[in-house]
Amino acid sequence: MNEEKNITVRTQKIKKNHIRGKLIFFIILSAILLLVAVFARYLCPYDPYAQNLLKAQKPPSLAHPFGTDRYGRDMLSRVIIGSTTSIFATLVLVAVITVFGTAIGMICGWCGGKTDTLLMRISDLFLAFPGLVFALAVAGVLGGGVQNAIIALGAISWPKFARLARGLTMSQKNSPYIMAARLSGCSTFKLLVKHILPNIAGQILVTSVLDIGTMMMELAGLSFLGLGVKPPMAEWGSMISDGRVMLQTSPWMVLAPGGAIFITVLIFNLLGDTLRDYMDPKQRN
Image 1 (cartoon, rainbow, N blue to C red):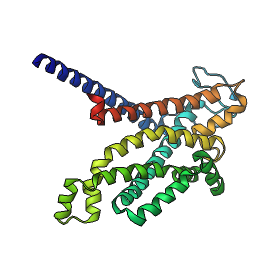
Image 2 (cartoon, one colour):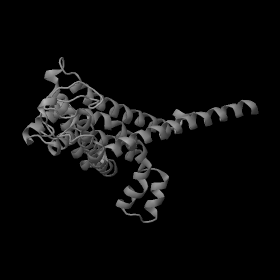
Image 3 (cartoon, rainbow, N blue to C red):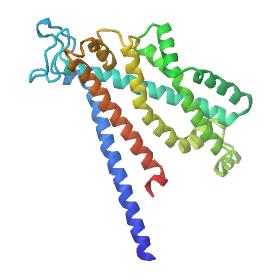
Image 4 (spheres, one colour):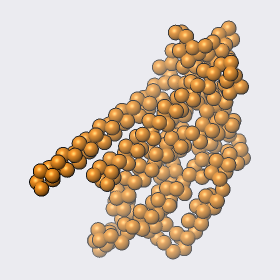
């Protein structure tokens, strides 16, 4: 029996170390993406906005590894500089909907009654429409642009976090440690921020990280349809839109930004999956 128990313990340790190693690996890859986005201006081999029609639509070569677009701009430089807009706009969007949705959900879960009913019906109103269609309508009314695209997608995305936080808060508010904190004289704000929030932050963080890839795709979709960034700003979705009419003659104009989106979304999705496994004891047994 002791030998079987030791084998089980060793197996669990191996699984735990494997998950930890994967998590560190994907954190490093994500950090590299963020560093590229931060220092994009210094990493570009050419001016990403400099036009040279003599070099228009040149295929990939040693001088231009990703080729050039129809204005002769270096695609590698535009993909690198486009990471700043694409990645940081996505992170800002995810941060906004996470904070706002979590705050609303915690208020609903804690207060209950009419407050809960009113705010949840408002969230149902946003969920009643197809997400991207509603975002297109909001972005169209606001007139496009990165800020308006973030507002449009934020309007349809916060209810997910509100419902998650509401359910987690309701499961925690009657716990013995909350009762003890109440008896000690803690205010409602302190109970929510110092006691409940730390206990529900793990699941919300995992959901937030997993949502990065989805939000990046939707931001790229709005830019593809002309409701995101304004020309000549480089952004991966708008770059795909610019090159789609020349897909057969100059496929690198679409493949370069499309590949950047694919790799970035893949890394953040794998990071979210690994983080979920790491924070869920059942996944490590």
